[in-house]
Image 1 (cartoon, helix red, strand yellow):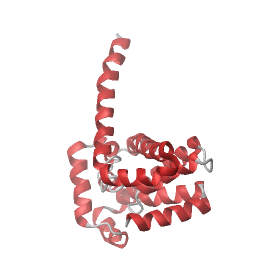
Image 2 (image 1 turned 90 degrees about the vertical axis):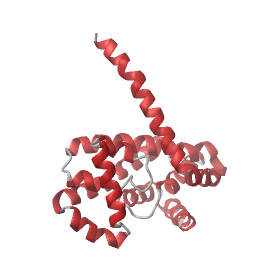
Image 3 (image 1 turned 135 degrees about the vertical axis):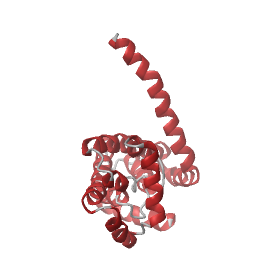
Image 4 (image 1 turned 90 degrees about the horizontal axis):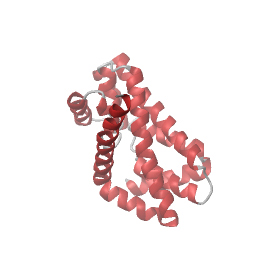
Length: 204
């Protein structure tokens, strides 16, 4: 699956550039089997060789992630869980996938939308329980953008830093994706622990 995704991503992005990145990341956020772990490291490589601009590519990918997530959120908001499940079978969304996302949302609440952006298999699907639960749309957007920004930037940086060896980065990301997700979550928690007391002291 990764190999086929790699072939598709390379073909689309080499021929379509920013538009290809936007389309692929939108589809990824709609839970289609086009992993960001393939799209974004290759994006980093295209930045390395000067085909794309770092800031524009990052913004492009974040907007696409938001649009795909919003489509799933709004669909779930207005038609409900059962209809989404029926529609989802056509793009490979199973009940077990949705149940996992729902448990994640029920356990962590609104912040789960942010945290899920680092968890493969949950990242796109978290939009569905958020929509069914009618989470405030602006909070949903904020959490989605924040999580997508960190995740997209991390994977683009891997491709950018490795340059011609980006395929090696793809292999490493695919192999250690869970550890990467855990590391990002730990860094975020540590930043919150450090920054929050400083803000409180500043207010006092």
